[in-house]
Length: 318
Image (tube, rainbow, N blue to C red; front, side, top):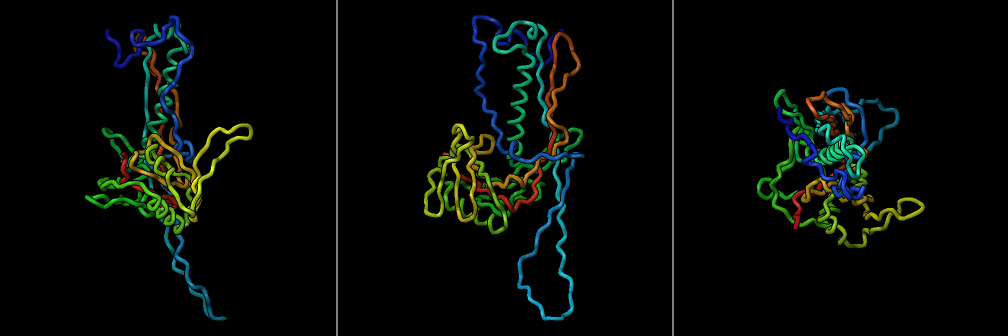
């Protein structure tokens, strides 16, 4: 009888005991800043729904002494929803490989399970930034949760050349991603920051690629300045760029998982991951001389107020 597909056995393994160091160096990046910063709430269904409430615009409020009182117009709430997406990865390790003495890890199955769990977090981060709308799914099609671009319509800068256009803004569809790219600039950034401020937003993090980060490091002007942040009292753990403008102060966070052409200006507490099933490590039924482990997570991305955020799209990447 043949092996199940993708069974990991001793013929594939690198690290079966020889004269080999017990230290394994994981060179794969596992940083997921947006997913890590977003608050987590409990989902109770595959469709997560919530309501938002907007205030009316300010107006002159002065009345004649003793006049009759009339009711103000009421602004109804807006009902929004997001679909949960199932993230699933599995590893199959032969029982022989689990029994041999492997360098750098006590047990092969535990080591491979840890790796796919880290990789799944990267997949989640990628999905949260993806230009995709919510997909209800079916018995033959997977559900998908809408990424950040499917929510943002108020404070965005994009190039309308060709047919670039905003989405509906309720998470149901992706933006039309056909704008002719132009260079990311301080003028674009400050314009979106001002728009967010005018809508009452207080963004705190800018997610951008390494290429766009290098562009941002060249921003100049008297209306802003960068300073170093010292994390911890004992040693300087990291130095991050803090950008100060009249419209607020934000931290630049290089992100590997959002596309290089997209820059997101985010108020982190205005996003939630509604978790229907937290990350679980499940042992599947044995199917011969091997052991299978499955890692699953199911969640939806919820935008509590898209006006508190912004995006700069269609930036050149070289």
